[in-house]
Image (cartoon, rainbow, N blue to C red; front, side, top):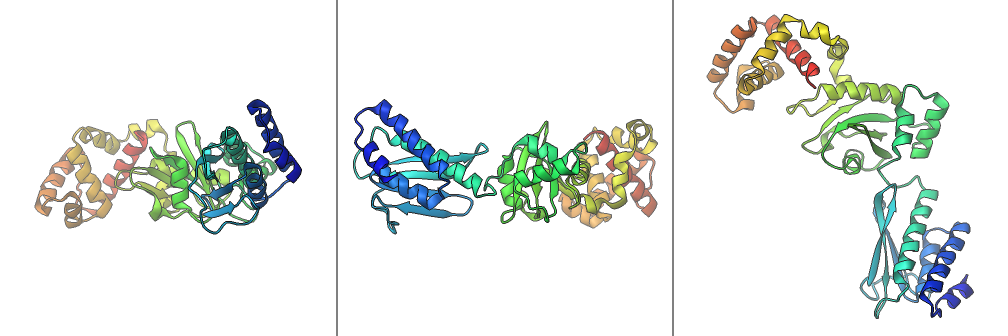
Length: 344
């Protein structure tokens, strides 16, 4: 390997040199080198210090041209390239060349980045968050048999003895960012299926979901059951309650099974549809149903509680429900939820 590096360092033909650089890294891959050995061989080939950084672990390796680990930068990075895996940037490689870049530096860094991604994948599980949608769909589909599901989870990097929780997400943010936030120190994978994002994780920190997204969190059961629960929980999310755990729904989850025709034909649901054209009334009713208190609803709405009382009196007349009675509050809350499920 050292002799090949020596020969490559004296090439005077750019095209021939590029071909030989590719052959150099193909040889390294066949030998299944690890990251330090990859950096050491690359530094010898480049004739200058080489650096590799993996974002997921924060690990940085810098090797000087003599094959020794460099503790302090010899020069600033003259050329850099990203390491990508599953269309996600997982690290960076660079050269610390004291003079102008070599004509083959771009080729060398490109092959080094590809080789580094292959090493990370081989000795993984991979540190990426984004995953192959086909594997994710196989893991959560009710049509998959247990053997296929187990294989898909294994390929995604989940150990056989770990429970996997599934999250259904509507988000404008990249799914890999959301996944890394809610499960920062444990295996997590994300993919987009049709119009719904999917996150698979061993743990989910509900408090870490960023603002502006909706997320339904399934229970840690079989992934296909957790996915069904996550989709149901997502339907119950609102701007006031953007993340919902299926376990927290309890008997409310039964509303998701009510046929649309039956819900639309219900008098209370139809009455909610009539007041929905007035955003202020809808917001007032939502705050009151969520809190069960005039004063707490007033705090949420930033108005005086007497104003809330007047609004609720008028809303109650429109609905034909006595909202100050416990039974009326329950009717209004159920009707409001059923109307939202029809319009999610």
